[in-house]
Amino acid sequence: MRKLIKEILKKIRILFVVNFKYRFAEVGKNFYCGKNLLVKPNSVYIGNNVFIGNYCHLSVPKLEIHDFVMLASNVAVVGGDHRFDVVGIPIIFAGRGEQKGVVIEKDAWIGHGSIILDGATIGEGAIIAAGSVVTKSVPPYTVYGGVPARKIKDRFNNPEDIKRHKEALSKFKVST
Image (tube, rainbow, N blue to C red; front, top):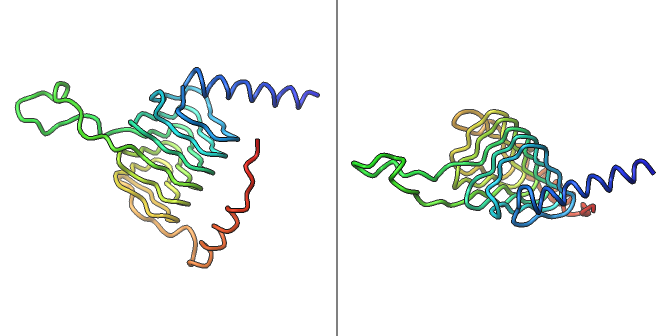
């Protein structure tokens, strides 16, 4: 009985957080988020089985987080919003540049304290090391880290491992 009550309270908390506190644009099943997020309202689309840690800052014009993604605590998805190339006008008055949005494809893992700048796509199965600054798109199934983030290694040793991993992922059922 105690476990059932805990599960019901968890679902109520997530319902409140999704619809009223942070106002995500869309959220899939089995979503969890930590406390004290900063979210640009109605701009974050979240897939199934997504985990977002505490103190994340999600403020690009459009953010797509696909299935099976994990964002550790203190991850920031920001940038691309101030023009600095207008001669004779202070940056604060120069307006906004083109804002592209960010896509985090399925099965990606973003490490603690990482920053992802506007316009980047994090490829399927990619891993971003803790404390990294991602300034450009990251290919699928690679591990990136550093400032700015650069390729450290491939996630798997060969293409056959990637194929087997993708097949295994396709068999996962979305839990409620």
